[in-house]
Image (tube, rainbow, N blue to C red; front, side, top):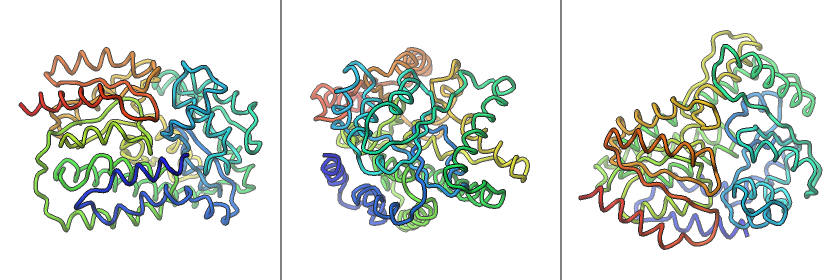
Length: 399
């Protein structure tokens, strides 16, 4: 079951010296994904996939946004009863969660699916037609294929404007300037804290494991911003009071297709070698919160445009025709973090990251940065070959 997978993942993350302030970030997943609290609030729920939905708009309209991707092999197996087995496991997991009514998924009144890949393009229609625990509307948020903003910016802003109107209709509340500014301020504080946490990961890698850092980031998928901000502030306070001695392990950067809790097997295998994940370039990690929303105009329309721009411009997703910015981001992160190598995660059948790997590996090779490509499925025990390859990679970098 999903609950058992969460308990096992959290138990595996316990280790001597782990910060006490990390406990709430695991508890929010272990204790029913906030389901009881959300039911008691009585507010409409908007489930979102990917990073392209401006959650501050949803909150400003009075709804609760929840990012619903999950790393659960059981859900992927359930989805395979409907979809071909040769379908992206994350897409199958979403379908399985819909069919099985997993925590929080069953609460969504509206589900927003950005068309970030071929699987997601068809997923919106499929979810609207499949029987589930409850009926819900599914909204396909059409992404542009390029970030040439002079050409696609107006169309993208129209998409976000239409979504804002749909959420307002769901809640019966018009999005007002004051509410949107308050939510944007909270989002920017989350961004500031994320950058502080990532600086600490780089400067004192022995204080926070990469798996714990990603757990913190992913707790923001389902937590209220104020809750998350308070607990990250407490975590940073605790970590700063500790010795900032340098971690002894090989520094690694994690990139590629998203890794979702509770399937943190790849992170655990890396850390069991003694290596330290000091940075990540993932939409399931730092990428979502790293960049602040830039406000050029304080009107309601200006704030709406800023939210729309922020949802797409900082993204380094390979779903866009050109992904030079992703390469630039990788190189910058390698330089600032002092990473000795890159572990590139490719979820099985994810063509976007698989094709992108050809270019990434070539450019990193030119710079003398070793790369380990790991192809993985959701759920189950990690193949012995994966563990062996990770150990050999770390040993090579240690030599």
